[in-house]
Every structure is written in structure tokens, then in C-alpha cells.
Length: 84
Image 1 (cartoon, rainbow, N blue to C red):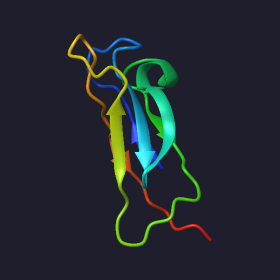
Image 2: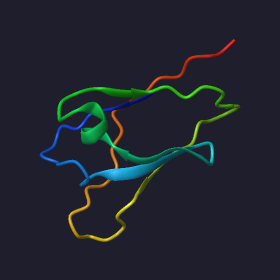
Image 3: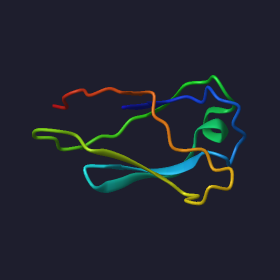
């Protein structure tokens, strides 16, 4: 599970990013404020079927790569639970 929340003064659309796990994009155009329904609200995304042998690689890539007001990606926590 990936845990997100917005704690800064960011409006919907200002912090939008993709999330890749183990080299595979699992979330596209994630906008925490929009999806959580506002700031200071938890947003949890559960990802099933992620294979990990020695490490888990999580990549956050901003959609707006310019410096014009796009806030950088942010993640609050990672929870790893063995399936099976």
C-alpha cells in the first residue's frame, strides 16, 4: 500500500505525478488533493501482485516537468504485506 496526503497549501492540479513500482507505471496522473477530497486527508492506494526479491523500487515522476508552479511528487508512507 502506498500512503499519500497533502500537507502543503497546494490546489488541485498543482501536484500531479505518475507512480511506477518495479519499473511498471501503476498510477497515472495522481492528484492527491483531488482524489482525497482536500488537504490533510489520507489517500491509500493498494497495489496487488508486486513481486519483490531484494528491494522495491518506487519512482515518482512529475507530470509538469517545468518550474512553473508544479509541486514535486510526494509520498507519506509505504506498507509492505506479503500476499498468499
